Length: 328
Image (cartoon, rainbow, N blue to C red; front, side, top):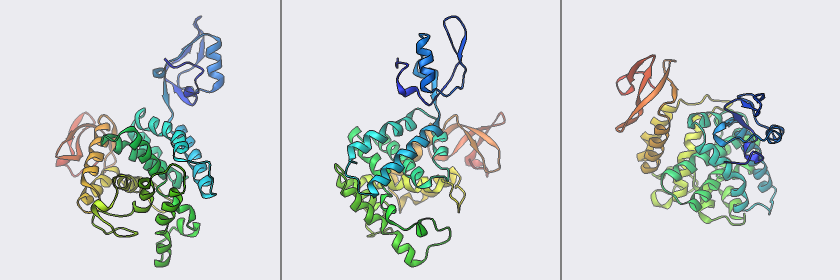
């Protein structure tokens, strides 16, 4: 049981009405808990448990955005107070909360909105990298370092002019050349932070490299790309594709999975891609999905040989998307 004065409860939504010992309603269901509510419950000698509440995802994401923005700004202004350990202590609790105490579909949706995209993207990449690392069996210390690396992978963009970063149209050759420098900037900036590892810095440098050598900045391939970077690359591409931007609509989830899977034998590590898609789809069993014809269906079962086209329930009937032109 978690003590009711623990700030852990603040910002969570009540699942049930809370009554006094005399039967009077103290707090109604769906109320968002604040410090004053916890004080009220304490005064009445009422204790609540974790299962009496649920996290409000948007509120947690907003808190994370504010913290990540602060981290990026401090690093950009050469703050010597930020270390790997400090960033981990600040960010990891929220990343873990997003990863394991919520419906994954809702978390992905909350992280793909277009406002505060830069920081939302960094959080999204950190969350997805953490999940992939966990599913691959990384140890806690490695997971912590991987998550921070995912969070800071685009740090070098703080040195790129807004006129390039926020340009709606296609970048000119000169602008694109300047944009690519963010990998070098990020490598240098992360390398200068206390406690950061070379592998974390290399994530910033290599997250646009590809397995076949077609990426940048150096066109390295295969085992020349670090394991952390292979994970963050998949997370980066996935989040970019599913996100809404001022100049583009989000790509449907099934289409993102299809494209990433098709490219996993050239651009991305196939083991990481397979692990990612398998586990995300498994966590979505029972979730509602929007089909390409506009109807809503519920995922019932996955096919091991075709994870992207599951069996769904649609208006009381079952539909095998492997044999249908409709897609999830």
